[in-house]
Amino acid sequence: MRRTNRSLGVLLFAAGITIIVAARPAERLKAALILPGSRELSTSHLTASTVRYRYFTRPSPDSAEKEVATGTASVTPITHQGKPALLLVTHSGRPERMFIDTAVVMRDGLAPVWEVSRFSQRMMRWDYSGKNVHRTLTHPDSGTRSAEHTYDVPVFHFNELEALIRSLPLREGFEAILPLYSEGSDELEMDSVRVMARDTSGVWSVRFADPAIVSTYGIHGTTRQIVRYDVVSRRDGGRFRRVPLP
Image 1: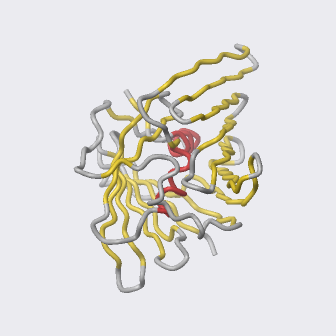
Image 2 (image 1 turned 90 degrees about the vertical axis):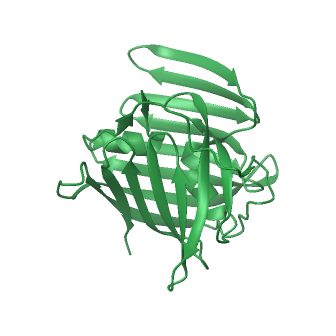
Image 3 (image 1 turned 60 degrees about the vertical axis):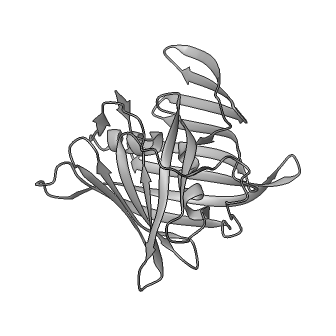
């Protein structure tokens, strides 16, 4: 069994909701493989910002929608070893069950450097180096455990997915495969993304698909901000959406 990407999965767990599906191959498109450092990714729009959100879920198509959590996402330009980088910080959940993820990625092509997640008393750290991922889990009850994996290609990680989506070429019909390391399953997924169309308000629809969910992002064509975000569970049609606050 596989859970959705880690930040979304933890958020839903904190809200008392799960979306779990049997693992199956991600959608395969005849599309280019985008790797960390790719020149296809335009990141100049990723300036200092903080956005607050409200999260809503509808566990099944015939159930009522309800608000389950709030959160924030921030981007801070920094330097890492003398080169431009980005600090990405996400808080989501409820006050008593908050998920916090902090990551550093290089601005040039969004290659990940390190990431730390905290949920309850558990802390996990990942150090990324091309194809290599070193994972460390620390918990008061079980001490510290470490593992290391080397994959076939250099990886992005799921908690930088929104920076990736915002940085794709916004042209109708563009599609690609993203090699995404799943913090939750400790596996590499080859997931698909496709730029669909731009509406009359200048917002582009971008579709992302992995084994558990299909997500649709609304990306403002000028600011590259995410103005809409909707998720559908493949298993049961349950829905999840996020709404930015003014």
